[in-house]
Amino acid sequence: MIKKRERLEIIYDILVLINNNHNQMKPTPLLRKSNLSSSQFDKYIRELLEKKFIEFSVVDSKKIL
Image 1 (spheres, rainbow, N blue to C red):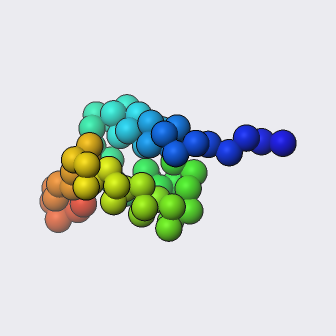
Image 2 (spheres, rainbow, N blue to C red; image 1 turned 30 degrees about the vertical axis):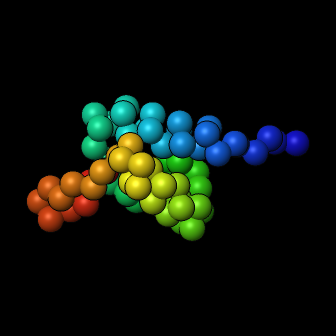
């Protein structure tokens, strides 16, 4: 049986994905690569935004994390 990821593992994975992409990543590819449902993804992204671990930027009218 496959072990579920813990909360901190998911947060770590999200931050590593962003870091590996030169600290810029669009939300949709991040959602796909993080292997989460959209509701789980929203929950984690909101938490990271509130704690100021990540921030949204707008580049050429596109949202980037």
